[in-house]
Structure formats: structure tokens, C-alpha cells
Length: 245
Image (cartoon, rainbow, N blue to C red; front, side, top):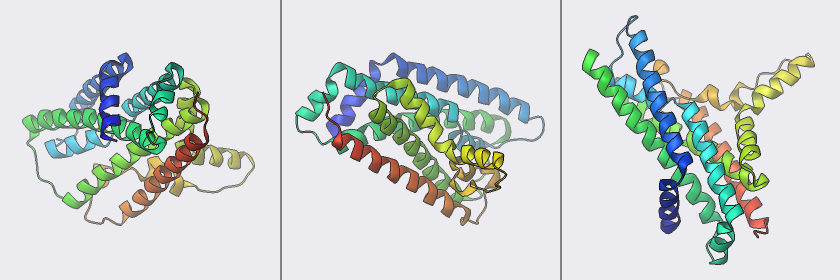
């Protein structure tokens, strides 16, 4: 597993798309700084809040990393690297998990750096402030990591299914929006049914909702963990049954 992760890290260093994701992260940071400066006119944002808020956002950057994930996996199929790896007796499950862990860690690192930069900039103007709800912030960060890993697992599983970058990413982007799509379809049929519980975006924690009441995070962890476990399981099954050539 460690060797697989090292291999993926080496692969990232040579992947131009990875540097594109880093550029996208930089653009997100610049945009966040601009938005923060505009919001400062309505009220100061403390450094701690700004840092956590930045870390908990960045979905556009996440989509870029999902594309990176699909590209790495599709290239492994095209180049025959997948066949060589599996042929060495390496577990397909370990290979799957190594991709999810490596790409998720890369994204988290990018957003962590962005969050620190935002925190320092906000702190230099308005002060760092205090962590009023340490339990909420800590669990919110864990929830964001689960959110990211679930989305990367969508990309891995769908790319295994299609063996194509574009279709894999498109299917992966559709999955978390299935509840919204079902609501729209049911709405046309005059059936009013709320599927908010199944919407990942609905459960994503926010510093604006921070409090000592941690009960709201229970449903968040349940939904994120179910999505992650479900698609990891599906990915395992697809990869195990797949004849890699």
C-alpha cells in the first residue's frame, strides 16, 4: 500500500493535469481573497474563521482533482500499467484505496495551505480571534475529508466502470446530484417529495452554522460514510470482476 501511494505521488509530479489542479487552487485562493476583501466592508472576518471556512469550501478545485483521478486511472488502463500492477500480485483493493487516499490527501494539502494563507491574511487585518466551538470545527474538518474521499471514490468507481476520463467524471459529478434530479423528475409528475437528507451538499458543515450543538453533524457523518462505503464497495466489486488487459 505504501509503495502504491509513493508510486502515485511520483506519477503526480509528472502529470501536467496535477499542476493544472494546483493552478486552479491558486485561482480559488485569489478569488477567495478578493471576496473576503469585499465582505470585510460588512464586518470583520477573524483569522480562525477564515481559515476553517476556506478549508471547508473549494468544490471547484475538488472537481479538478476528480478529473485528475479519472485521468490517472484511465491512463493506467491505456498504457497497460494496470495490467502490470495487478500481474505482480498487488491487491486490486489496495490499488483502489491507494488512489483514493493519494488524491484526497493532495486535495486536502492544497486546501489546507489555502486555508492557512487566508487565515494569516484575515488575522493580519482583524486578528486571529478565538476558537469558540472547537468540537464543531474539528468534526467539520473530518466531515470535509470524508466528503472529499467520497467524491474521489465516485471518480475512481465510475472510471473503472467506463474506462474513460470524460464519461467517468461526468457520471461521478452526477452521483451527488441524483437526489436533486429525482426531485425535479417527481416535481414534473406533481409528486412533492423532499430528498434533502440524501443531498451531500445539504449536510456540508459551515462556520456560519457553528455551535456547541454537535447533533447536526450526526446526519452529516452518516450520509458521507454511507456514500463512501457504498461506492468503495461497488468499485471493489467492479475491479475484482474486471478482466484487465
